[in-house]
Image (cartoon, rainbow, N blue to C red):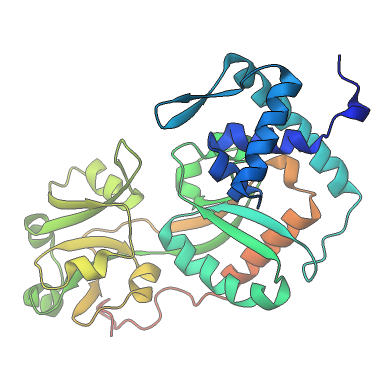
Length: 318
């Protein structure tokens, strides 16, 4: 049994980062330590636990059985220590040094995180926002503290028990090239033409899960010719330009990446709006820093212009 007075408990922070990243370089970057310093920590951890902990397999490091057994308890110890410290601390944004991880799509990042950052540089100069890609398993992402917040459509999250707060609403439009699809812009996009045109579809993850709008159309039994599948709403206007392709996009994302000649028209069938919300691990609800972050995200959402402004009566962007 080790005498805790003789153990540097900061090594547990290093171990958690090493097991999470499985990389000395990445773990060092995560903790703002040099590679040599992190290598030194790994050497001390190996001596402390009398185990290699991470062994090389080709170009990657894999955890030993002992390391895998330690991962959960170490993470829980750090969570409890963080909770103890947070309960007695105040968060002063002007002087705080902290990194927050937010899981969000490029659309949510450009729509919400970008305007929020414009105020943070002055309000919290030493706070870092680490934007992570969306996850197919938001509950595990938050439970394992791999993200402090997840921004997701409420329609995807269903009846989750995770604490959450609504952020903003958006509506689905069809993006197309006005010079190529002249009739659709002039007369409106009817269902027959919509099904005939080649489509760009947004999906997420290795199983290429459809977004809410495309899933809605699939449930209606609409048959479309999908020409391109991407994982970025923001690229749609660029890809549509000069082609006959059409794509369902969220109005806010298309307005952020305007391309001359690309217009938005209403879909030929009603498509339900989406409602973006933020979700978090309940352990962090009373964390002063986390509460500050949630308030900043909510304030950025409240400042957004409502969708629907800037369109004519026919639903075509002007």
